[in-house]
Image 1 (cartoon, chains in turn blue, brown):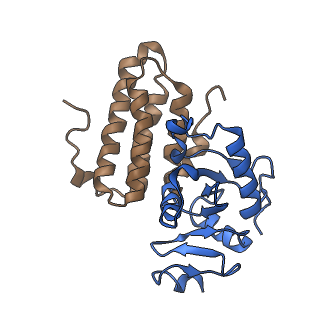
Image 2: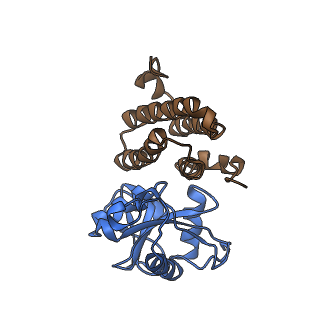
Image 3: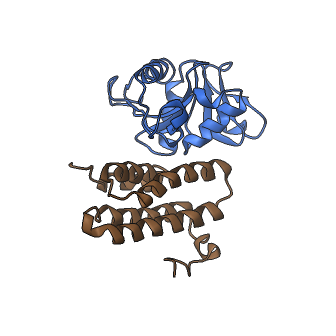
Length: 146
Length: 117
């Protein structure tokens, strides 16, 4: 059971056991490198915001952390697992909105003038494309939750 | 005298995070109605209240990631505070971002009207 694993170090959960880990300090954040189990996504969406889930993508490693109340929670998890700050970008995923509208490229962690991004919204089209690709691969394409 | 100067960290800490965020949001909402050039002083005072309450939240919330995110958000408001002119779009983005700090606060998003919307 997912709830029994908290506090025992990085634990495996449900589907994709070898590929989905969670942060013992916040069992609501999961680190994914393969498509998330729909039931897990549903749990993460319903846990906090009900209409969406916050996530952070490592555009170099092709992984994501999903489900924190703050993008900074997911950012911290990825940094703790070897990601570099400059590779991390935050966004929100809205299930049920369809492929074109399921991603909101907005997060406070995206404010990085040194990398040319002066606001919360990701401006670089190539980075947006990479995030879109990884979102569709790892989280979903805007399908309704099961 | 600084606005909210009588509000101590101890008293502020009695509110939960949802309540703190919503009270900061209330000040942001006041500022939303003060975007005309003639409102500059009032708008400045509203942002000053936002910064004061936000600083109290940072001071009373030990979670590192929350503090980190709050301080990032503080930079946005500080920029609005020092700007010579009103910046309705940046204000609206910051306001919406604040309401996404907690699920309870995010329920208020539906009541926020987009600029020009």
